[in-house]
Image: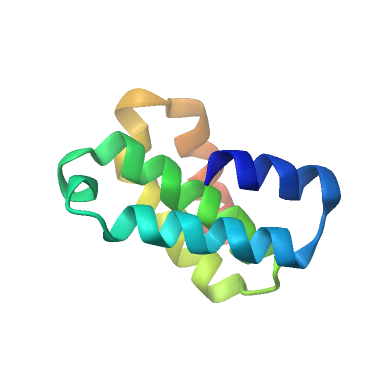
Length: 88
């Protein structure tokens, strides 16, 4: 998912953002996602950016909101960004 997201950020292609969002969704559906809160939070954060770039603002805001808790302990700067974007 991360590599596809990075590619989408370079190309700005909606198809690339969609593909990256789908990969993040698949990762979040795995059993490990429930126990690896930090990785799940990063997946939600990046999926939020994919959805934002696709114009899916409500879904993006939900992803950003859900990412905050998992990011606070591991990546506080990204948690702050996530919280701010979810409220925009």
